[in-house]
Amino acid sequence: MIDIDGFLNYMYEEELSENTRESYIFAVKNFAKKFDEVSKQNIVAWKQELMESKSPQTVNLRLTAIEKYCKYKNQKIDVKRIKVHKMHSIENVITAEEYQRLLDGLINDGYMNHAIIIVLMAKTGARISEVLRFKKKDLQKDYIDMKTKGKIRRIYFPESLKVQIKDWIADKKDDDYLCCNHYGVQITSRGVAGFLIGSAEKYNIPKSHLHPHAFRHMFAIEFLKRNSNISLLADILGHSGVNTTMIYLRMSQQEQKKEIDKAVNW
Image (cartoon, rainbow, N blue to C red; front, side, top):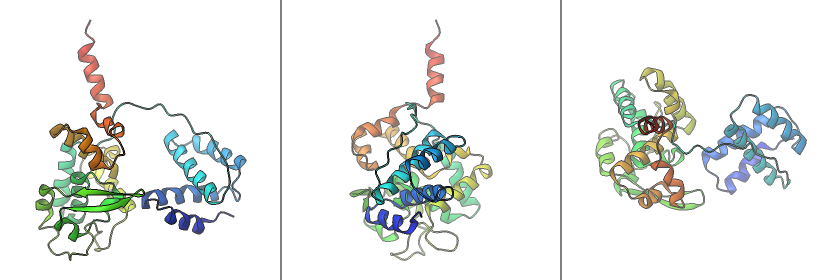
């Protein structure tokens, strides 16, 4: 019998992020629909089934979830991951032009709660799990010290952000969350992902560009266009070193192809 409730409590104690907990629980529930027992044989069979319809990255994420469950149950089961060729480019990032079109559309259509969320994502570079924890009082001190992934990091609120949303949040109390749904209740990361996908066709933006992490990528790319201090950006994004941040200096595949076409003219 798969112990979902016990696993969830275990992940709370391990201080895993909300997004990670949701992802792992989804994966374990998927496994539990097909198998009553966690064993090497069952996990391998599940892996083979997943490979028929899921991307290698998704399969590996599901395997990581079930491996975490095994750790919770004190079972030592190792399953080989699918090898994924690492692309040295940045893809599926919302552009500054698409961001502005989305923001203008949301404001014009009266979706101010959604507009606040995308501005917070785009102008802080914070993860969606962090953005959803912002309160009005945090803006008043220019930053928030947030515990994420077992460490404390400081997230700053730029002046342009505070000025932009000042009137939008005027009716909120100091302890109110900034990110709410149309009922005024704190929205979930899944809720944010849902309204972004729903906005794709409406505002003529590729669906692949409309996911919460795309705004974190956009923040990094736009920041480096204006300030080349890669170490500073690494600190802002909460990276442990600049190697992770260096990806934002690379071109997209489309940009790479364009430069190759220009260069290869012999």
